[in-house]
Amino acid sequence: MTQFDAPFQPTCVPGLARVQFRAATLYLMAGLVLGIVMAASGNFTLKGVHGHLHLLGWVTLALTGAVYTVVPDLAKGRLARWHVILHNLGLPIMLIALAAYLSGVAAAEPGIAVGAVLSTIGLGAFTLAIWRAL
Figure: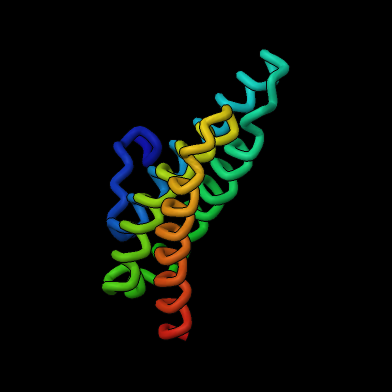
């Protein structure tokens, strides 16, 4: 049995980093599927959702998860917990509202703002945690 046959045990990855990595991969796949659906249908109405799925979902969550892995003490703090909670709460609210808005539901616009503000406050907590640690 080699090291590649054994189940991976991410003991060196803090719990908050695992949350970020798992969420990031879900956003990666959702963005890819949405991109394929848009390309196949020729309807690119949701291209803004596609971009946000990848940038704020896949890229940002994966990068913050990597930071929490490289600096595990950072993942133990209250700011890190607020970051993960608010980012992962706000982003789906924003994306769903953005998809509805781009599809013609004008009443969804406040949801975009609510989700964006929650995610931004979460990323503000991440930023503050980084600045305090450095």
